[in-house]
Length: 89
Image 1: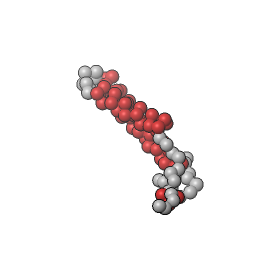
Image 2: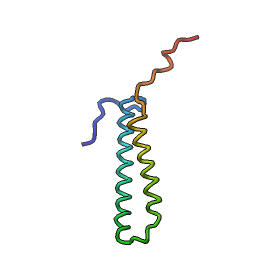
Image 3: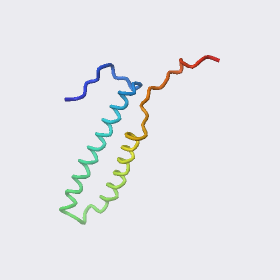
Image 4: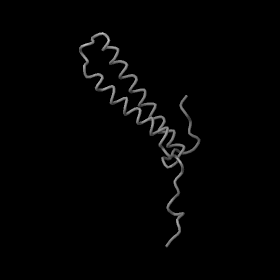
């Protein structure tokens, strides 16, 4: 079942941003897995034909790792304070 969001989706909501970023990461992992596993499967049948395959897989894997590091270690989902809370000068 798809996740149900209990309120109106708003990109300014930190919990919604976190969920959206994790879903985007899951789609990225799924696309990488499906595309690369299919190419490496056919590379097993014809070893000399897809010589560019490691040049595609390794950078894409690097981008995927960077995406994961950003998402799970660097991303900050704390709510930002609106500008209206600052005192006037």
